[in-house]
Amino acid sequence: MPRERGQKVVASNRKARHDYTIETTFEAGMVLTGTEVKSLRAGRASLIDGYAFIEYGEAWLDAVHIPEYNQGTWNNHPVRRKRKLLLHKAQILKIHNKVKEGGYTIVPLSIYFLDGRAKVEIAIAKGKREYDKRQTLRERQDTREADRAMGARRNLGD
Image 1: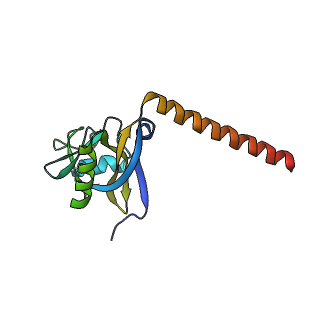
Image 2: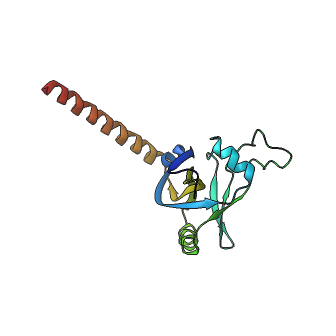
Image 3: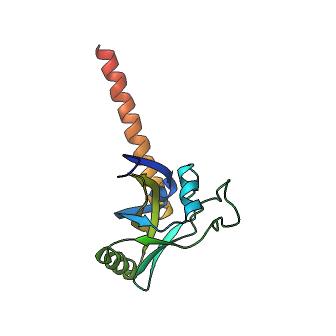
């Protein structure tokens, strides 16, 4: 029985949602060493340069920065190493076929603990062009202004 219940987010990659159009997301387990888990439980990780790839029918997460555990000894983990992702074979094939199609990449969105187990949310994503990013920002700003105007109008009616 797990010690913890619920979901505790350790790190999220907000820039990925800005730079990429997210198509499909998957939840994957990670193969970690003990000091990596302790470092994650302390809430320390960075997904900024991270990416995932498929190699020989296995999914891997690379360039994710999990800093060394402070109380670790000589057997502390390397900071940026390849970590195996635990996915079903059908999911791996689906991801591999989409990436092989061209124009798609696998981006980690967040690392979290779900009922005491470390998970990573990965996404099949397509890179946005600069004008797409500007258009997304403009739409977000327009909806924010419309909500603000509606709120002001509601307050006047009271």
